[in-house]
Image (cartoon, rainbow, N blue to C red; front, side, top):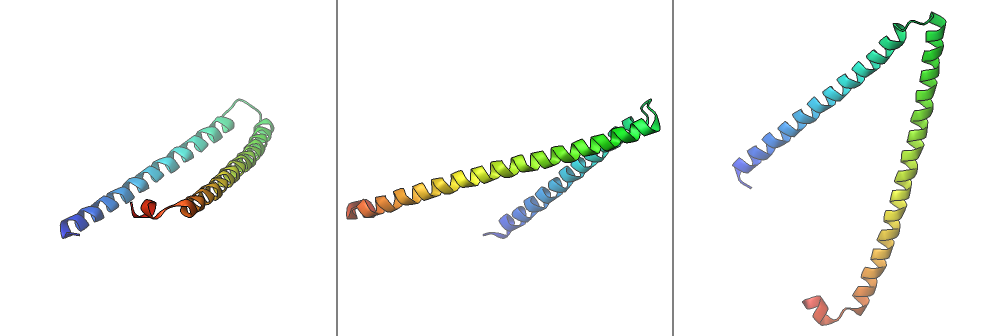
Length: 110
């Protein structure tokens, strides 16, 4: 590998790393902004303090429940996907093994 290619690869890697960092910062900023907006909406809503606190508790509970449900859903989908891929691998391994048993010298050489 030439020195120019090595330098170019290093430059590209650094650029990708910087872009990833920028994207992460934007995502974090957007998330914080959204959460601040939600909190501000609750706090400045024309409700009594007790109603607002109760509403916040209910929202927190709903978010927790939703997060747990989504986590279980993703876990189940990943488990199903991995099981399918494992079954596919077993099937392909068996097919390859069978092909290797029936292969002739001409098949191997060509």
